[in-house]
Image (cartoon, rainbow, N blue to C red; front, side, top):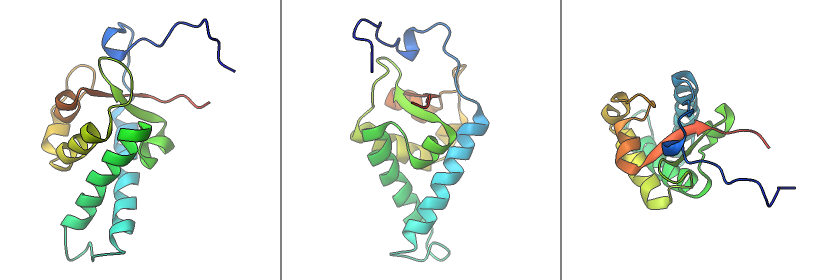
Length: 134
């Protein structure tokens, strides 16, 4: 049961004590998601012959899961989530799709700031945070 008098969570942008999850957890989530994308793309294409189907599935996975649930399956396993930087809420499907597309380009993910926000995070107003288990 939640406490109706509890203070709302502080958005990451306004939390001076915000500490991002490790790069290992983020990379682990991406590896899990990539394996799932390879498995799903096997249903309609040969990912060993055609390189685009797993990438397309990854973009759609990020749009759907991050946009609606703030976590992909890989993020759930590694206990991280993707939230809005300014408000701490879900980023929505459109921004989730854009974030997935930018992540598929790989280069934006390698350009990080002090909060481990890649270019794909900054352009979509997102941040990766810890996801406590309930």
